[in-house]
Amino acid sequence: MGCVVSTTKDSGGNRRRPGSIGEVSVYVPGLRIPKPVDFAQSLGNYLSKNIVEHLSALRMRIVIMAGQEGPTITRTKRKTQHGGSMLADLLQALEDYLPVVLGLVKDGSHLQYKVQFTWVNQEDDKEETTMSNAWYEVLSVLHLMAMLSLSQANLLLLPRSSSSDGHLPKVSEESRRTSVDIFLKAAGYLDCAVKHVLPQLPVELRRNLPVDLAEGVLRALCLQALGQGIDIQLGMAIDSTKATLAVKRRLACEMVKCWQQAQDNIMNLPLANGWGEKHCLFVKWKYVEAKAAAYYYHGLILDEGNTEKSHGMAVAALQAADEYYKESKKLCEAFNAASPLSRNPPPWGTVKYLSEKIPKDTSSKVRINRDLYSYERIMETAPTLPDFSLALKPDEYQLPQVDSSWRTENIKVGQTDPNHLKGDK
Image 1 (tube, rainbow, N blue to C red):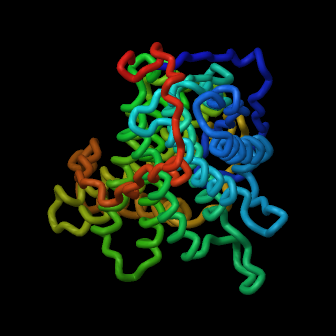
Image 2 (tube, helix red, strand yellow):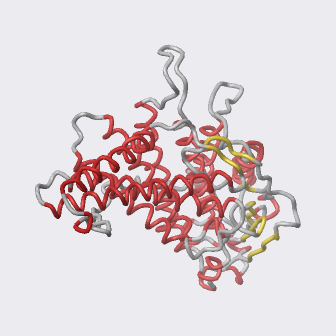
Image 3 (cartoon, rainbow, N blue to C red):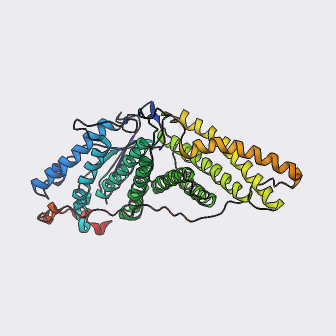
């Protein structure tokens, strides 16, 4: 089944946390870093030298790249010596490694229990977690692939100044569309982890996973990716002359649902440590911000009605939007002040539009309707938001086929340790 070894945060000094992570459009709760593994010692009696060396080389590449870039990778678009993106290169290294390491779990092989895999945590109090189970390695790889994808989206969504037009920093439409694709890819990795990898781990090991890999955190990150993808879609709808108020309201309400479910998934988890505390604040901030957008568009649609009741409900919805917007600004400040420090990029998209429209339209509608109707007739409580099912879905990511190098591999089953056979799980 595999043993578990956890190291407390004061013992090793492997976890390096930056004091600041710069501008944040997409929050990434740190990158879990793998530590070196001696495949030759663990697998030398069972596998050929070629495949052991292949595994070792692929994983060592990840260890080196992640170790070098982990503390800074969410901040800057670093380039390799050949002009490529370090994020993209590390993601490619993980994609190259995954079909090879999956050979350890093929057909329930006893080899899945032979190697001790160690990863440095970020959100958990334990500095690092070691497990003798290759499915833990697969889960860790998928999680890192998702975090790298979210990092890519963050870099795409930081406004850039254009030397050609001299305007204020902005995010191009191409970057926004690309970011939605990346969000869905990240959500696909996490959805696969929850549905197809976590169930492979025995219940005892699942209980001992670091909070970074807890099912609630994985689900919340998946919903975050979807929620931020919808946010981009709403921003593009705002910029479009063809998008109706109904379309914008639907997108805003779907965004509320994503962030509410994300919050529900992590609210009872022990995320009080650095990255984890900041993670909770980010989800809470985005949930309240989404409610401001949803109530704003709901209010505008209600105001199109011709009855006193609809106008009263419209005012109540717009007042709710204004209150949620004010609360979201306070939560944003709390998020940025939490360690590691961060700051907002120049406002753009949905946030920029709503920061200008919500206070102005709320004040205007309230004044007009109070002139028309007595104050007592205006609803004190905001009307219920309409419920829409989520249209945006994670990519249907599937674990790759086991690498062809395993086809000619003669696993020396005679060396099997009976205590580690699958049936003993």
